[in-house]
Length: 364
Image 1 (tube, rainbow, N blue to C red):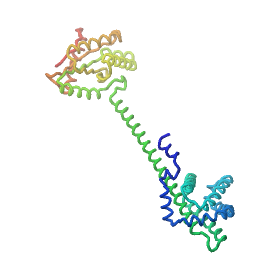
Image 2 (image 1 turned 90 degrees about the vertical axis):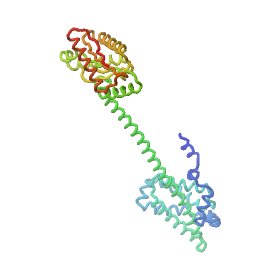
Image 3 (image 1 turned 135 degrees about the vertical axis):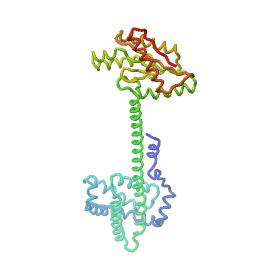
Image 4 (image 1 turned 180 degrees about the vertical axis):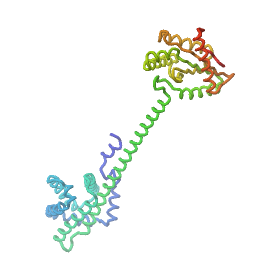
């Protein structure tokens, strides 16, 4: 339970609405409801006990003749409860004291009527009918001095508070709807952000192998070249092509070929120590970016990759490697960087096909 909710249920309706004793008196003054009026009404308390039941019966005969009101009442048990409540209401009009407790009772009446969906037009028209009936009985008691005007001022006093609760209910509904809309908006924004992030992530990943794709490679290569140049450091690129893959694809089928690519990508990720610097360039070609790596580092990485490949595929699959390096001597643009490594890879592949020793060709 939030603090605001707890505070509300620990306060009276008048306190929740900020209605103070001073506010109550101001409302009386504005309506001309005087102390003399209150005393005059209070003097009829005993008489009210005698005519209240008759008024309630007459009132509900009229009320049940109105289709909308008859629908709201619904059944005989509800009608009986309403008649009991109405008798209490009529008697309270002649209690002679109309302060905070009285005001809270009027606010509760308004809250109940608003909650069950009684429209203001029906409430006001019903109040006018009730007032007319009470005034008629007052005139029968004392045709000359019946306190008709004090009663009307008091019932207008009541109506103010009933309308306050109607308005509070509308404001609360608007606030609730606004909060629900804000919450839905936040939830929708979060969902959109998550889905956008997922889509963006998928756009940078290779569907088959799960490592980063060609698009991600070019973005990362450009960024790493820019970073190396700024810090006057080195950057090496390994361009790897799988030897024997076409034979596997043709002889065992594309599904087998896909599994080979997935296994090699997983191996490459392990050798790289993660997926941040390894990419599937396309087909059976893969790239690795090695920030800060020199010739010895590249050779060590290439040897390690070949040993892991031998262990994984038992000689059924080998790799041709080309290398490009960027250093303070030269920081090529991305396309030239890739082209140099690609050319080195083809030289390595030709050497392997001719029976020569396969070595990574490093460029400046």
